[in-house]
Image (spheres, rainbow, N blue to C red):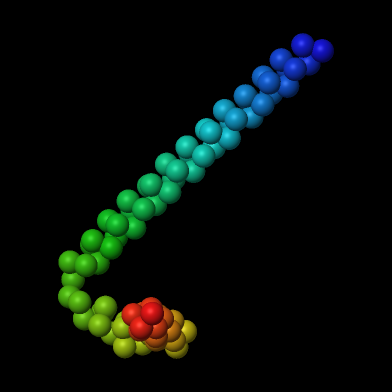
Length: 80
C-alpha cells in the first residue's frame, strides 16, 4: 500500500516537473516574442508619425464605439 502511494507521489512530482518545464519554455518564448515586437515597434517609431496619424483616421467603427462607450462610462462614474 505504501509502495503504491510512493509511486503515485513520484508520478505526480514528475508530472509537475514536466509542467513546470513546459511553462518555463512557453514563458521564454513569450519573452522573446515580446522583445522582438518591442524592437520592431522602436524601429517603426523612428520614422515619422504620419503613418500613425493616418491609421487613427481609418479607425474601425467597433473601436470608435468602444471609445465612446468608455467615455460615457467614465462620465457616469464621475457622476456617482
